[in-house]
Length: 377
Image 1 (spheres, rainbow, N blue to C red):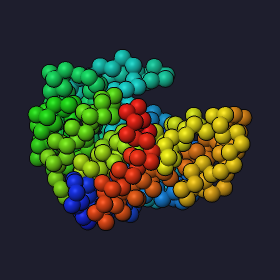
Image 2 (cartoon, rainbow, N blue to C red):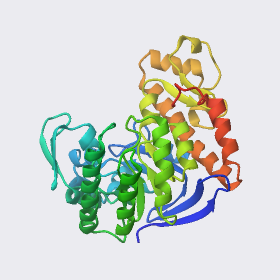
Image 3 (cartoon, rainbow, N blue to C red):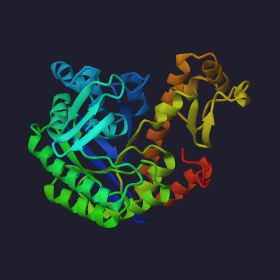
Image 4 (cartoon, one colour):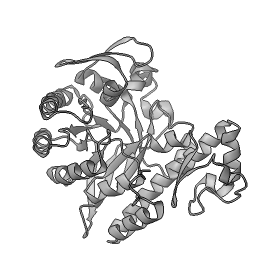
């Protein structure tokens, strides 16, 4: 087996748990937030900066790396770790989400998906076998099975058909996987908001014996209440001795809610995407640093933060960078936002270890303003 999950502690208060995932490129503790390096880079940040921020594992995107520079180029470079000079663990998604969310004129068939590239319009075909071939070439520590990503909302009948197809594709992914001793493969539970479909999908995937399990089809526009309800009845269906991954979640409230329901791993482009527009996540809630109120504010972006940005620069300077259109502003806020979420999961792990998860969750909710119904990040 390419990875090993060690369950260190289960919370006495809820389903939250503390663990360690051992991989060929080192270990990482869970719960963990994974910064997204879509095109073999976490946007605007260097390897050294990510290491300084405490990033233990990052994510690469199969679809984008297949299109540019091509999986064969990365294979010839010695794999994604060597290509991007990152020696710690890497998880790659299957490309499925991008095909279903970005691509034009998709045609879903049993053999795979035919579609046009989201920018060039070039005709492409991605199948379970192709997704695994690309990820084998990339050499990631954790790979994802190719799945269909239904939109929200979708009908019960469509979700049933989609879940069935995803299960058949999952079996094909397992058969196509060539590096089982070096690369783990996670299956993805689908089924929308319907408990019976989630149960069916989870039980079939567990029977296939994947190295870990992701909960897909969430964070696609559904209300927070539905996401929490689905997690509450899905995570207990998954093995305790394997990692559980909620895809595409990076807001503080959603991470805390999911940890409470037994999830171990998270990823999202949110921290770097909002940073490029001048939005920072702080212990007192989100801040739009370009606002006029910060023109003469010479305090740190977040006085409670230990990141490079908060130690060396003021809100007034950051505001100036954004108003002047300087790239450095995007970099500095990206550094801060990644550190904010890495530190959030560090603090979550400490709270679980000390049996005070609910106390910590309430503090974050209160300080960040998450009890306000319109606040999600």
